[in-house]
Image (tube, rainbow, N blue to C red; front, top):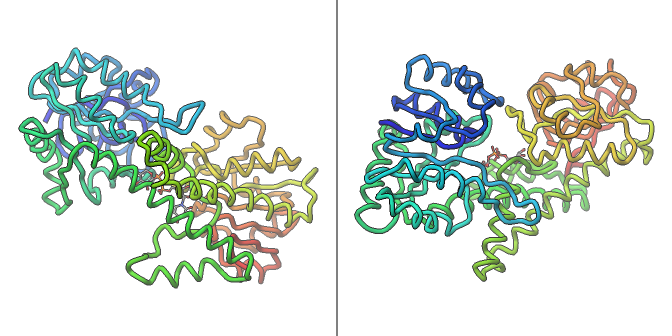
Length: 436
Ligand code: UDX
């Protein structure tokens, strides 16, 4: 099927390439010329495992191309909109400027029978508003939220856990659902559940899924705070409660908390939207979820200060990791960089390393020192904090090897990803998050 994808960031670029890989004829459109040039050459403008391969295949097959010209959307039957919805500069709500602009730019090129499929994460009620704008063209609009995780984006797009399509009431809606079913047929054939809902439900599925995940992480981080007051070990606690299938062990990783381009801004936007709807109290707990999350960053800073017996000035602190999570070069709202900046502001000489995110980090925080090589970054450190659990730090770094590089054997395990006993046995002072 001929498809267009408006917006070629983390979501749109992956969606476009993934749709081409399952046989569709796709044009990806973005206003950013540099991004389009890079994608058109088959180069991913950001780090995402598997993306370069599907991009190259798609371009080679002739089924995938990229352009800045929105007029090239004409002729596609489904137009996916995957532009960003960042947090507003002066508030918690989502900034819908890019979504509105994308729909406006598309209107002259769509007509009867076409379907506009929103994928961006938006405040509930947005789709109904956009539908009013799309309807006079004879096209219809559906909401088809995206649940991909960075680092697994290609796989999550080709084989998602579930497909959700919110459609308007009436015949237009059911015809649009059928068209989306056709788009995703190969995935449905493999058993992926395909859920058709109304527009508001589809918008809410996305924000509530992210709110739930954020709440789960903050729940275990709240338990980490209690563990710290009692001498308990939150990692053992997580494993023990996680054996209950109703709870499950996933997303019970206590540490420096969640960051990224989604969870933090999505829970804030959700709370802001609920306020507008007069239901602020229904998700009032999300403010607490946010507060617990941010407190853990402060806690990590406190542990580094403790490790260095209160004196940061003139001390070298090495921060292992800058990305908000491993397998990504995304530094949006990264707990790792937030902690690095706080340590820097307290007077420490902070060295940051990361296998993929250094360029992005340097652009945002040029005041920090960046070192590509892990071992060079560790050399001379008075204290080390592991802030992003890349395999290079969690699995491949032995305490014996690290001992040969640092000046002081003090480590803060911001992701509870190291074997504390092993590090202690090698003479290190080990500090976990919610572990004795
Ligand atoms: C998230 C959702 O998982 C995805 O479904 C949605 O489409 C977009 O938002 P993503 O932002 O890629 O995906 O990252 P995710 O893997 O959810 O991790 C988010 C943050 O939570 C990271 O900073 C991660 O380090 C942190 N995290 C995750 C924890 O602190 N503990 C955990 O147990 C799990």
